[in-house]
Image 1 (cartoon, one colour):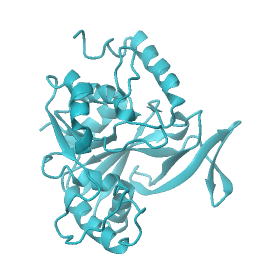
Image 2 (cartoon, rainbow, N blue to C red; image 1 turned 135 degrees about the horizontal axis):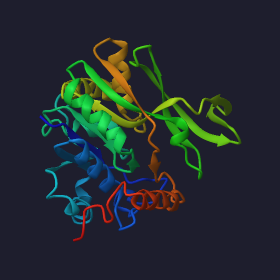
Image 3 (spheres, helix red, strand yellow; image 1 turned 180 degrees about the horizontal axis):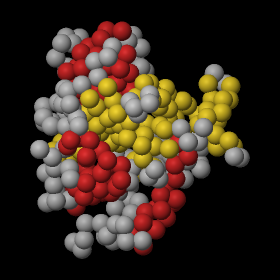
Image 4 (cartoon, rainbow, N blue to C red; image 1 turned 90 degrees about the horizontal axis):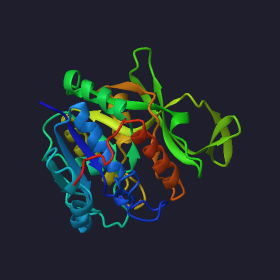
Length: 301
């Protein structure tokens, strides 16, 4: 069975200033999502599931999936702030989304096979999808997941600081921990992160998580139970979010799962800030010029 690509696209991109998932960055007006789906198809994925807000499904269908709906089966699930969850009778009202792990949980009813999770606004590169596809097809198991680790220097923005999950691994490249570092930025030849107003050096060769995870469908049961516990613990903290690394770290600590880190030397591209768009456009134009992607990516309409 071919693996599935799960695309998290329910966020609005507050720092970027709009619905960046629908923004054109490719030489023929492609979105970053177009590149993710194209690379996934080339790497052997068999289905795409989008997690979106119901309010922009029509725009999403018209501007995004209409280009490739005949290339691969496409499904939609909705993440709303107060989507009812079995096992939680009184989900507290809040305005802030519950986070990426909650978004993954929304797809539990439509995914029964190993799957990869990606952000809708991140360009991961063909090699990342290829190594992920091999793992999901050959190694994924109920207690064995994976993530693609990117070299930190390949993920920085020239237009501001970023947050990254810095990974630590054992000798077998099994993930030991993911620690969120904030306000990461290059200053001269050195990369720093900020913690409690103090700057600390960080190796530019460190592997970081860009939210490209590979899971067996067994993960849904773990996420469900952990979300019930999370809501109980943070009922009166409306800004707390339920992130994928929180789920993974708990599974690692309780030895319920192991996670292989798949190193990638691919250059990551993203539009964290509006000023990033021009550099991403230039990079994708160069990839098309080099013949790494067709132009337009889905052929002539």
